[in-house]
Length: 314
Image (tube, rainbow, N blue to C red; front, side, top):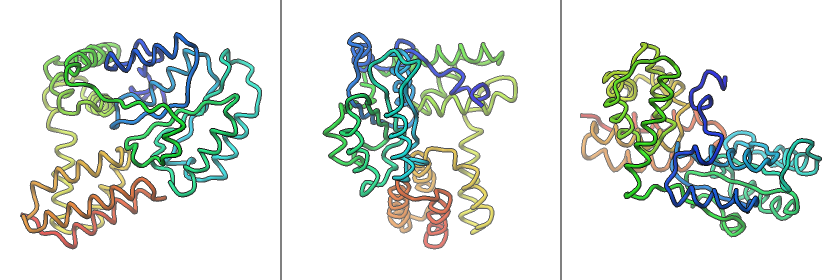
């Protein structure tokens, strides 16, 4: 699978290869120079490189590490406890670092009443030989007790560095497409980056999906997400529940926060003015719930069903 997905196949393995603002890259290079990691909390929007940086730090420091997905196995305290305890207490035969690292991806999906407090205890219990790196889209969903035990780093790109990072990403996309023997129009790539910036992961995924045509042309700018959005509006307007559920299932691979934000942007243009407040409140409610629910399909379908039943379209 890693050879098939471009986001994995071309994922940077060194901090120097990661597309970051200068100040962020300097922070991580300093960690490498000192050969020491504190407990870290990375926050920022989807696709900005949080997980990539976490893995690259471990690889370059020679740390033995494990990945735990906060929206999957990380939801269950017993599973989490067993994974971390077994990993932290075992002897590494290959690592060259003094510490092991537990990377908890999408930590903001973990229950703040049960799982996150347990993580606080794990940090204290295994501090002698383990460090923790948490990634999240929304740091306000991480409890203060974890904040206070971590160095918090925001993956933001200052306005003055956006052109530089976008240019670096354009060069990276050109390299990927040449490696995959896909012809492309550089101007189209630049527009695609601008359309999805700073979500680099989504941009690469869109390119791979469209590349089945053998070339990247201006069609990519209007085909994938735009057609998908128009389809959703049509299904909701015509109250076609079965087809709407199929749409939801097909889009579950999208980051939940980004998905709900996209639904908000799309519906805002197609709803009667009196229905907009109700839609906004509904979307906000289900977007918040997406950080904790056990079944994302049910949560998304419930949101769209409520909009279908209560809102009027133009």
